[in-house]
Length: 196
Length: 196
Image (cartoon, rainbow over all chains, first blue to last red):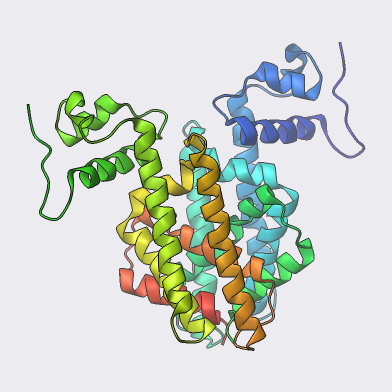
């Protein structure tokens, strides 16, 4: 029976999770079977179960990995020194880079979370709500310090999160734009606008 | 047999299309039957067919109505007098108001278009591509006239269209934000940024 091939420094569980994310994204969580996942990895289904308990466990792993990474990274950025603008710049950059480099997992966390079982569903929505709140509070602080425009902070968070999420369409169409240009131009647009 | 009830100035076909859009949005196009549509309108299925040929005809009606409205409105705005900033402001406002007042139809055009049959699928994608191109050219003109920042115009269009499309999440959560505030703050954010 074939062994799960891993590159150096990539655990078997990570290979399984990344392959699952690619399948869940393309076919949807509900339509993906563990047999297909095993085939995509190149092993027999039983050997998958040495590493992972069930399909729903994989969805949990993906959603919470994403939720926790965003929460941790944003907390780190918020506690650093710098203006609200510096911090927003770093947070938007993190979102864009995650869309570029962890696209499958982020797509699954954004679209397939509704298939999580309880109590994971409620936990995941709480993480998401708290994440939004932490961005809202960052913008509120920036407004108080007179660093940001007096804008409704929830609307600003909605605009920023929706814009970076729109990179899904870029990922799909793969326009001929260097990633660096995309990143800098979107960050500058969201912070400083486009009107001279 | 019950007749299709219509308000003044709303054609029967429009009642059917709007009800279909609500069902396609909630259940998905594939999972909605003509029988359910008839029930939702409050008529027997056969009387529906006096007004509409098939389910796919309804999806076509919705997608092309949206595609054509955006194309026509944007062409009108582009040919008006004013700066690139004025025109972008009017176009973003139109997008936000369509998300607020024609949410079901716009949602279906954004998400369910992939179920269009040929040649409608290709035609719809062409309308969408041309719409994006017309926004890109508006931004290019604004940059040439030194009214807009020297930004990659495709990235700017992606940012704007993604942000307004994100109002889907607002529609779902119905946060306690007056629509007027949402509209003005999002427009100002996308044109002038949020950093002072």
